[in-house]
Image: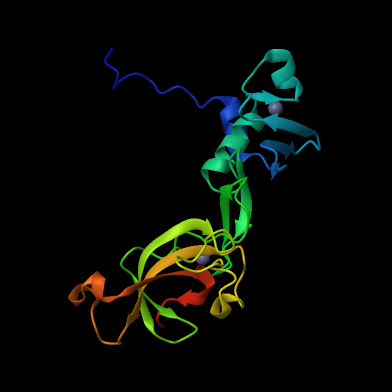
Length: 200
Ligand SMILES: [Zn+2]
Ligand SMILES: [Zn+2]
């Protein structure tokens, strides 16, 4: 019998239940999950260890429906993966997951400014070109040639001290394409992300 004519196996019962039963999954924030079964039972799932406190797992050593359900919800983006936490984008307010040890403020992929992008400096209304969106915090980055940090610079004091630093080339006259300008003609600055916005 060739593989194509082989009868498909009926879906495994645990897999079917993992997908279709009404279970409530909550991330505890320490990499483990609490799963509430339709029967009312509440079980602890440690996905990395492959363990669940339900009888099916403990007595039969099965990859129970709770373990499977947690894996499914992670894949669907419903709960954070182990090592991640839920967060809110500081720019658009969308929910996202980030590595657990990354503190706020955080930005979603859409709100992370891209290299070469032209954005507006909210303090001056001028256009600047993004060189790099960094992971550094404004309070940790010292301004070249000055004795203070990006956060302590007088024009940055209205922004979050822990905001991400974005390196930009500044300023650019409106109507000028960044492609027509030599980077050497421009000054490089480090700004808090919140100081920059996309042109409307
Ligand atoms: Zn279980
Ligand atoms: Zn966002």
